[in-house]
Length: 311
Image (cartoon, rainbow, N blue to C red):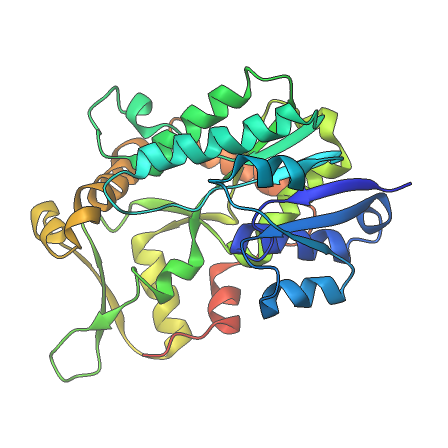
């Protein structure tokens, strides 16, 4: 009899990647059946998974009864929370992350995989005070470790999909066809990048294939570290247009952001620059985790080839 894997948020980038990876893995798709959760199982994304043999159920992180029902009978739960930028990001992360873990513990789930992040407040010795989902997810990770769950953790790097949204290059305004990729950090600042929709599942699959090996550990999930200058160069190659990196003063960068996100997003970038995304030893942590992934990881050039920049 196959073991039941419950994926919370199976239609999102991380959860969807886990479902896709397990469905396509010739070993794991025999070992595990999948139940996915969504807030509306009638939507096309959910029904597409149903057509591939995934049981889809409705569950809401603010509804404890729905969570316990969704997790009932699970051998393993993969859980992740959606970041909400409304000025209460930390509070949402801890409330929602603990609700998911409590529901799993309440129904006796034996194995639990959670998508966490490093605690930048602790790593910076308290100098960074607006790190929201970074600190909240790590606080939740520590809470999970106190529960009667055998747990393992992934910590995703920065999503490559951000380069089509908040970190997309903008026209320079000089009418010469140049675009600017801007932020408030030095061009040599390294950032770990992950194609979350394609690759998250490759680390979760590694854990599913050998849970004892990764129990209690955190896999720092990224293809590699890329500097902001290297990212601009990759954008130029992909778009066949000139994309230049521009470092702005932190205050100028902060003022260009939406008010509820400005302190948070500015501190995140300064944290990458001054402390490293995963703290001390970020490079080694990323290299080791990349070696553990169950499948080939997506480079930034390959990501842009699959998801072209429309400049």
